[in-house]
Image 1 (cartoon, rainbow, N blue to C red):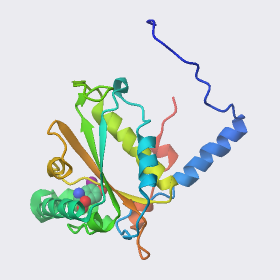
Image 2: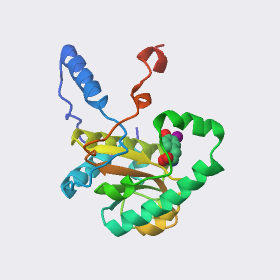
Image 3: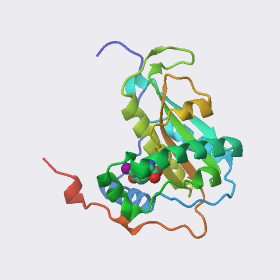
Image 4: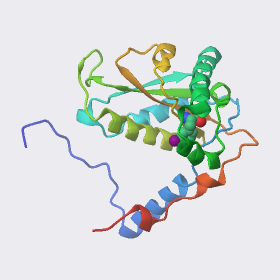
Length: 224
Ligand code: IYR
């Protein structure tokens, strides 16, 4: 390897094998209680919760450590309303004919439609952008790498952190979503990738049974 500065990696506890199994199972038990939520309370959630969750997301593995993401955190009612209006306009077109019948049929057991009131109700919308250009340091305009993969992993870690904090989330991907650049005041070379809705679930929130059915291990893995 080329000469480069290093520090020892000593952060991981040396658990016994039994302890590792217990902890891996506990991680599974905690994560399997996560549900995509479509009914949010308007109860406030402290900004600090979101700040720590974003710091957690920012530790994600990524291309060349350029950290090619930006999180536009929206809480103002005006901005949330603007996002809801634009997203609902896209969704109307989607459900009214843009989507294939096969896609509409696949969504039927989830009960989704073009109404997205939670974009206005939930206390926080985190609009996630991928940066095609950037680099490690503010102001750089270097090429970034594996932007989709990096932002995808960071988004997963963000969802995990928010779940650990007891918050419900919803990944929303209006299509096209270029309108998010304008509403969030982001430059045109940033790619809007997702709106992550976060907050407390509404008291009468429900989830579709369809979404609770997870593939068993032997269907999602092969061991070679
Ligand atoms: N974006 C639409 C449709 C939609 C698409 C998929 I794939 C989903 O898993 C859920 C919804 C909407 O938000 O309703």
